[in-house]
Length: 509
Image (tube, rainbow, N blue to C red; front, side):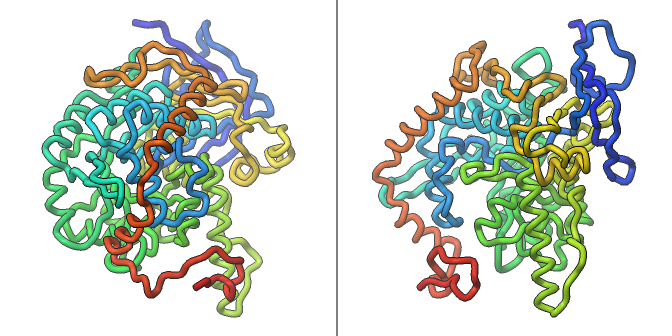
């Protein structure tokens, strides 16, 4: 048996949840032994880290992310849903397994740098059977804890107009998933392969749940071997995703819906009765003109936060907390104003969104009791924040939770520990050691390779240029028109243009 490793985070301000999930900042030592939080005796070989005047927080949980899209960062700043899908989703058909490895690895490292220690990864870049292998290889190599959401292959049919074809859970897709689910979880301690203690679990990702017989026929053939069965949610109009799943008998505690904006009054009862959860992604939803639901009082106990597309910004959960909190405060105040009322209070607390990004995320990811809080016996996914940086100075001394939610940046995180292993130290990402691909597949990058962040960044930029070359000649505009028809959107009610924030100037013909 390998000797145990230990880290003592000494004299830090620990953000501890009580039985009511209220946070009490407490100055204490936190002892990590192997992959778990322990408050037992300190072994002789314990590494001591002085955390006096530092904040020690549970790692953040991101419940909806497309980690692979790193090469598209900066490409979607003014895109709504219709322009985004062909350019940032359908173009996955152009990616090689090597492109995917570098994008996935960089996205995972960006998450770690921002204090995210667990990600539910919606990986819809799977044009060949080798692609899931490359994505999982990158996840295991990064050190991130993840729920890898397998999606069927999407293949390119034509460039002009851009057309793709989805393999909707064919026997080929299911055989790939079954093999991966059987071999997982991946990233067990001491190896790059599977094991009961593995960090990377399998789940299934299904597309939007819409009315009709499709969800029912599809789901009867889905093995539930993974950690979660995830669904994207409908945005506006008609029965909501949670209602559709309920109608087909598919709603349960293993279901995590994404977005699920514009809910009906009955939806909260369905979440409560079934144990299903929802992931709000404030940056994406607000960009799309939709309102995130996570702080709705009737949704809160089943809600969590995700980044969704880091291709249009805000890579960390604190940034999503901040947008969620202030958007909810604005909506509340705006409703009061419409009724001729006002409030002396903000209505929502910083602690509420902190809990969405920790405890709520753990519950939604199917990892409740393992991550999301600093408790004895929990996985050692821990963050150490600097408190005298320009952004955190004074705020951390006044209110550590508010300092993280409203003031922190990724650069304020000095140390990130996942599963008892240090992944960021001194404010810098540690080197990455490439693991083997799972299920005896060809590795996208040779196992045993050691990579600095600079080396990863260079490969991402090379891949970005190559993907741009491959995309030349794609007729994105024609594909947008096809999407509008496919999504049954009305051109007569469509508004175009980017205008000022004054409501009277929003519309441009």
